[in-house]
Structures are given as structure tokens and as C-alpha cells.
Image (cartoon, rainbow, N blue to C red; front, side, top):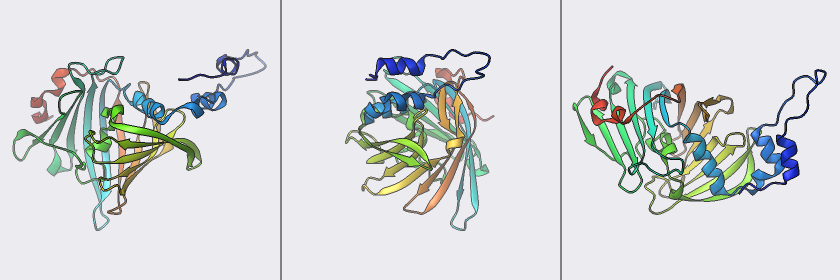
Length: 288
């Protein structure tokens, strides 16, 4: 998959001899290695998207605190605070364990009317995915379908936020010509969803920065195949957490409603030490 000219690759990867007079050396980044060895030119759309997913799957057990800021019709900012904990059950071959790919809990801490509302998502291999909500006003947990549902009135849907649990087999991938996003060269991959995929989108288009395959821009087409949303991430917000690189500051633009929401990751613990018991339905009802 990643064939290169042996001599040129050895030259790029072998550390040069440094003398005291030479001073510190700047080693090439992974993106520079790919560019100079022409590996990047040979990657297919599926291979590029697989690298995107492999980067995100390194977060095997994570705890995250985030907030989203949107504006109402009068232009007043509305802030939503929530935390997320996730456990990835994939093995080294990316196979599910006991038919489970991942479990994720999302719990709101503000504003007041949303406090203690919680969601549990269980992503299966063969069985149908499970989604539950705990509503403090009802005082109970029940099964729901969150397809196409937005996060507490923001322009981000749960599907956008939980994209890391998606299967690569859900879509067909086409690599398009590289493009620049704000002066940065990016790989461009179009993903067309297959009929069996449980998605509210028919296709997406991702612009991946070449260093760590983090999307700095994504466009989404709805079920009517209309360009409906656009996500843009700040390149300078891309940070490393336990070997995984993510953008901690991104904005979603609803192109049909002409609204914006900004999502900021305030805290991320990549090795949270979570276990099965942390994802019991009863945990949705617990209050700090």
C-alpha cells in the first residue's frame, strides 16, 4: 500500500550526522515525508479515510468536557456545557468485542434546564445500535432514535459529534484533487453513504490536513442531496492527546438555516480507565 523509492525514503528517515558546529537539526514531519516520497499521491480515498479513523480510534478510553455556543434568532449567544465518556471495544484488527464497537455517554451540565440530561449510545457490529436518554423531568430512562437530532439546539448533530464510531464500510470513497484551505494543502475525500448505512447524510466531503489526517473542513449533503452544513476547524487548535490528534475548536454552519455553532473542547483525558460498569443505564441517572 505504501510503496516508495527505497533510497529516497531511507534518506528522509535516517537521522543525519550532527556535529557540535551544526547545531540542532529540524527533522521532516510525516506530511513532508509523504510529500517528498510521493506516498501521499498514491493513497486512495478509502486509505485516506481509514487513516482519519485510525487516528481517532487511538482514544480507547476517554473523558471529555466541551461547550458549544450558538445564537438564537435575536443574535443572543446560547451556551451548552456537557461531558462525554467513551470506551472503544475494537481489537487490533478493528473487530468488535462481543458484537460491541463502542459505548458513549453524553451528559449535560448546563444550562439549568438541561442539567443531568444524559444519553447512552451503544454501537454494535451485527445487532442494531442502541440509544437511550435519561430525562430529569420524566425521571426515567427510555430508548430513543437520535438520527438527525441536534445537540441541545446547536448546529452539531449527535452523528457529527460521534463520527469516530462510524464504520468505514458505511460508504464508498473517492479521492479528489488536493486543495488548499486557508493556505494549507489538504487531501480531499468524498464519502458517498451506502443504502444500508444508518445516516442522515447522503454524502460528505472532507479536507484532511496532511500531518495527522484531521478534517479542517467538512461538507454534508442531506437526504435530499442538498449541501446542508459545513464544518470548519481552526488549524491552530489541532492538539495531541495520548497519540490522537483532534481539533479542539470548530464551527458548524447550517447553510439552510444560516446559523452557526462553535464547539470547543475544554478538557480531554485520553486514558480515563473506564470499564463496562461506567456505561450501565443506571449511570445516566446519577448526579454529581
